[in-house]
Length: 73
Length: 276
Image 1 (tube, each protein chain N blue to C red):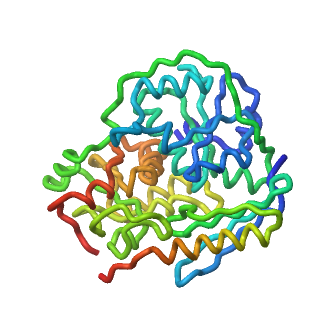
Image 2 (cartoon, each protein chain N blue to C red):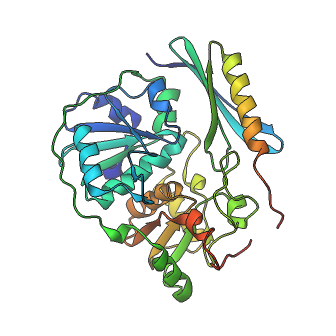
């Protein structure tokens, strides 16, 4: 068994840059999202298809990023 | 020096059945191990197995001895650590194993991400090594900074403080990495600290940059190893990564990891905070 269909890409949610990694192990797709800087994985999901896994992970990422406060300098 | 503490994914693949080599995965995402891991690797949970779960502290000596013994690690084993997020918690585990005196510890350069991206063999079977007896040394506090050490360093400017968090955390624009819970009352940084985000030390594929590149980065902010260095982040895991680079790649002698980090300093009543 190994990771297959491995892909990485960058996107933005509400001005926050994110990095999306998706791959398949066996019959499951796994998607993880990190926040680019510092690069901490904060959302992940699995699904029967790439689309399912990415959709759920992106929903979680959007929710968590929405909770991050910015403090004016 | 690099060859003694960093191994490539190729090296690990060639040593999967080497009885002297024990492999452990330590992830930020504690569920990642179960998705598939390096065959034969044990999985350590940083939230329960690599700390004292009552007092905020590193793993107690006895608990470490049990963890290593149960992982089939003997005092003369070569321990290879790897994990997600560019080896954040693998470096955290490396730091703790060094605190307790394990001689031969190495990090798989690039970590879990590189192993997956290269399409290497994965196993979903939890490894169950034969239990052995492990004897740890007393903790080596020369590798660890406590709050009084940092307070003294700020006052006397006797050490270089390195803040390895992201620029937005350093300036106080955010309190914690985006998407992660906020865990302090004030944003900013320890007075006098230099900003050198840990991520600058890493290549796109998660491997460490060359020694020359890392040295140039630290030279650029005036951290040259001519005086003691204290690295910190939010809870001490990202700073373990930078501590590893400063001590074991650049070979600077006096480098400490301040694991209290910003969750201690940023919650401390009347602690001085510098912005931006």
